[in-house]
Length: 168
Image (cartoon, rainbow, N blue to C red):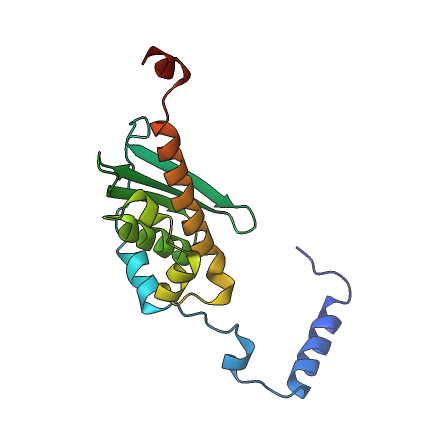
């Protein structure tokens, strides 16, 4: 393949310009490194409660939420016993390390709580625990939304069906 006419002149001019400009150290030219807090790394490398529960079960609530802006998608499921206590929780998340860590932490926090207690978990608490930077706060918001969606799905399943209420 032949170079375009004048390409050599352009290359020499660019080289000369680079040689005349002051040099910046390599660390100043590269993008700033974004370091995750060790708690985020721990939940990302060792996620707790990954998996699925039977979404058709009456005592399982499923929350599926997403953030179109960043592409994160989070599914969180809870299993509730007859006394109203969350006995198991599972998640599957497609997203960044902060989204996975937020999901993992959320499943740990809901276990052992009642349905009403789980409603008190806030994204600010998740973000604080994981030391999320402001640019990653949407991940903790998704986790809170997933908890609320799973709880709402569970509560909906507890309501009697239209035909069942009339039979009693």
